[in-house]
View: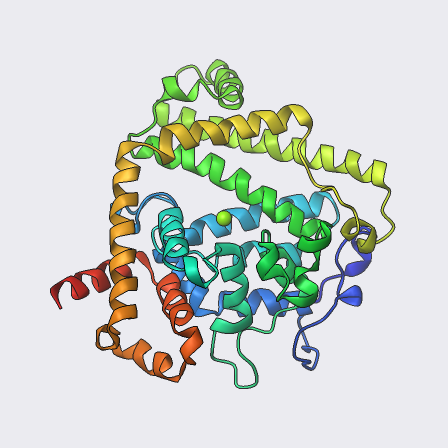
Length: 379
Ligand code: MG
């Protein structure tokens, strides 16, 4: 069913005001343009690969941990709730959320940092910019164009950060990084929904892995408040249920704060259209000041207690060794390239050879990268 845009707020992104696709296409019959974007994202190979990519824990470490795919789905459902509450475009926000991590490398941030080092002399590697490259260029299955030919609004939402150097080569989509303006509210909110999702699910996964315990979590004021009220309500519940109830209570509290505060920001700004949102130098979607501080503290807690935990950094170091080995083998010896990539590589212009290697490695799943590393070590 086509979305009914008449129910949207005047500052929502609508198809009527869309800045369109790079290549013109006939309108779909029974879907809206953003529905078509979402469907193309779900049908992409990059989306399917997310299921085997690390969020914090490497995919084979356990079946119940979040992967990039389940993380993206959680971001999508949080985003859609917020979009509904603010009368924004729910289909667009879903498309942006499902695509926001398509450019992520194997092994999470460790993979991305290592590829950035490997590509130092060639302009580096940025995962947000890579997500845009995936949907603009790297998915190669449509007959008439490279990439998925998504609308400007979905692409704008995917590119949440970008260096000035890359922004200069992107035309209209890069302009906001040069004149320091903002994207649509839908894009701003996916950015925050991303942080809400990982801050909460990483606590859950950290406890499941035995790397975080309840006593430590009490250092997080947001957690402590939720936990205390849940414990009072369900004094005889076991720890597993208490944790789940506390986390859902927390997620609910932060989403409520975000919705209420964003409404206040909108009242002050009084935007008449999406143009007023975009030309603003400051974000319109944000937490209240008090919650913003608590949310940052939660992130800092996870940084020092989970992401820098010896068990996690051990994996990080292994990931670095594997990515460097794969990159250097491919770059120094064409014979080491797997057959599926060799053909593409031979057709690539000389100047872009390292970028082609980087794109190929970035697209790998954790288990493909591990297998590839083992193959190369034995060569
Ligand atoms: Mg994310």
